[in-house]
Length: 151
Image (cartoon, rainbow, N blue to C red; front, side):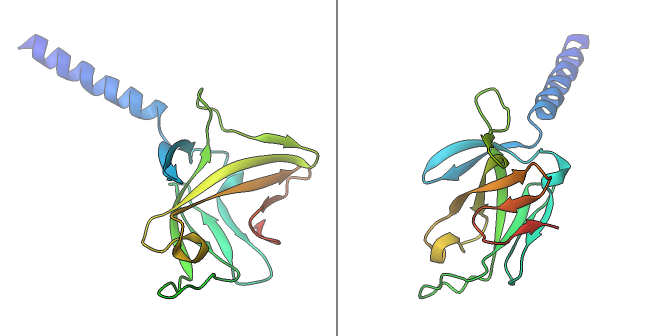
């Protein structure tokens, strides 16, 4: 009996440790490929990105969010206003967030995956790869918009 209790306790502790290590990591699908991502990132990335028009990007700490085009690509049967998403920064084989050094600072590739039937590019795509651009000044913008800035 003690052996069974010990094994159950060990299994519980092991699963907790595995979940702690992988917290925020998940696989998102882009163009039929599975991509390792994380939404466990620096707090500076969470929040709303917006500009002069009505569109915006909202990244929540739990990996959910909303993407709303400034101008929607309306196809017949696709009148999407806001796309509910799950999102993640792309991570490399060692689990580190991918970033590219640029003259202005860094660009971080991010995937948005629609959680509803509504999708990107006139409801023709279930996901979108984008980049968050972090400038040396600390300003953060979204590459798919001409003016979305972190609020």
